[in-house]
Structures are given as structure tokens and as C-alpha cells.
Amino acid sequence: MTDVSLGMPELPAPDYPADVRTRLEADAKEIIARYPDSRSALLPMLHLVQSEEGHVTRTGQKFCAEMLDLATAEVKAVATFYSMYRRKPSGDYQVGVCTNTLCAVLGGDEIFEDLQRHLGVGNNETTDDGKVTLEHIECNAACDFAPVVMVNWEFFDNQTPDSARRLVDDLRAGNDVQPTRGAKICTFKETARILAGFPDERPGAVEATGGAGPASLAGLRLAKGDTGGRVVTPRGPAPTGGQPPERLSSHDAPQDNAPSDPKNPTGPVTEEGQS
Image (tube, rainbow, N blue to C red; front, side):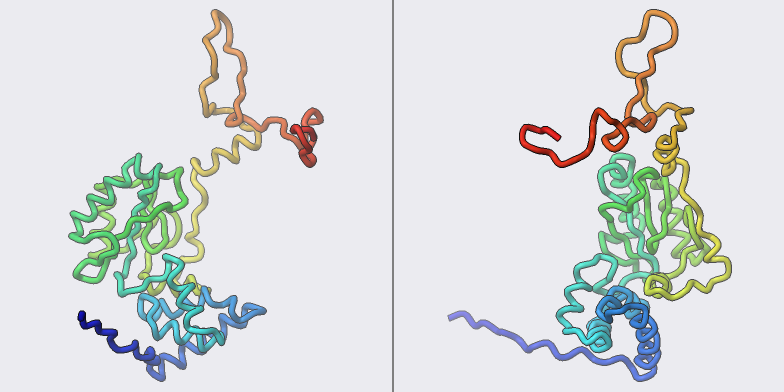
């Protein structure tokens, strides 16, 4: 008969030291006061406890449950659902390389593989000095600047293997690193506290917001009727003489749509596609 050992049940999570608990309670009460329903404060509360230890520990989950009058299982379900909450110790700088379709095609896969070799780590692993945790990300939501790398959720656009190596080397050396837009990079713990809803008190940080780049604004420009720079080439065979016929596509300028075109009124669709 095979001997099956069930093992010992997991012991309750330890509490924070008294001084840490007192400080976190004051911050937690400030967060909770922002919401009419206290359980709505769970996401920023998880960022708060993550700012303490660099990841969401069992102690942090227990603290959130007690402050919000939730079951620990409810807190754990949320903490393990979102990838922005770390489940194990990680580096001061979370370096995420987008490997989704567009970034991958334009060099994201190459950047990620190069950084693994350069840093000597795999996916979701941390360098020996505790500075950098490398991970691949499905989408950084900045496809117009692909390939994109993020550090502690700040954007580094139009990257190459060379620029990405310089980036991680600067982070490990303790140099000031400026993202493509926004304030200079701070540590993951400091970022977590900002995400919990507390102000970034570094001089000039709030002013260094940056705006959308030209690639992001192209669609807005076209929607406003600016067709000075064509986005697509006119379709069809070239004419034998004179100027090519104007063949606007949906990329060139706003076209008549159902609300504005009497020939295509809006309304519920009935049988056989009749409006």
C-alpha cells in the first residue's frame, strides 16, 4: 500500500510588526474613506501592502481582509487574478517586454530573448543583485510605438535590443532613467504606493506627464478632417492622364454613418434585415 502523506496544514499568516501595522492602518483608513463601500478599496489596498514588501504576501492579504471585513479567500482571489500584483519577491524594477503580435513582429521577441541572455534570467526571474525582474507581457497598449518595453508600468517606446540592454544596464547601475513620457523611473515599491492613490512627491514628477505622440494622434487628426497626409494609397488602376480620382477610405476622412446619413437610418433591425 502506498504511503500518502497529507502534510501539515498551513499556519496562519503572521501579522506585521506593531510599528508597520500602525503606519499601514493610517494609510488604509485614508484609502477606505474614498469609497462609499469599503470593499471597493481592495485594489488600492493591495497596492499599499505591495509597496511595503514588494509583493503581496499572506500577511498583506490578511491585513486587507481585516481592514475591509472580507474573508481572506476573497482577498486572495483578487490578488491572484491580476498580474500587477506580485506573488513572490521581485526586483526593484519590473521590466516587461511586449511579445504580442505587433510588437513581436517588429522585434519584441528578439528583445526579450536578448535580455534573457544579457541578464542571465528567464521569464519572471530576477537578477542576482535584486534589481531587475524580467517578464514578457501580452500587450502594453502602445501598439503605435512598437516594440515597447515597460519599466514599473512606464513606457519605453520604439525599442531595439541595443537600447533595451542600455536601459537595464542603467537601472542596475542606479542611474536616473527617463521613460519616453512621464517622470523618471522610481522603484517598484514606490510605484505601488503611487498606484495606491498617494501623491508622487518627487520634485517635478507631476509636471513631467508628457502627451500623446504623433502616431497616437493620427486617427484623431483624420477624424477631424485633416487629410493633408494620406494614410493609404488610392485603390484601383492608375488613370491614363490627369489627377487620380479621389477614393477616400475610412482611414482618410470621416464618412457618412447611420446617425448622419438619411439613407441609412438607425433603428432596430427586423426580419430580413429591414430597419
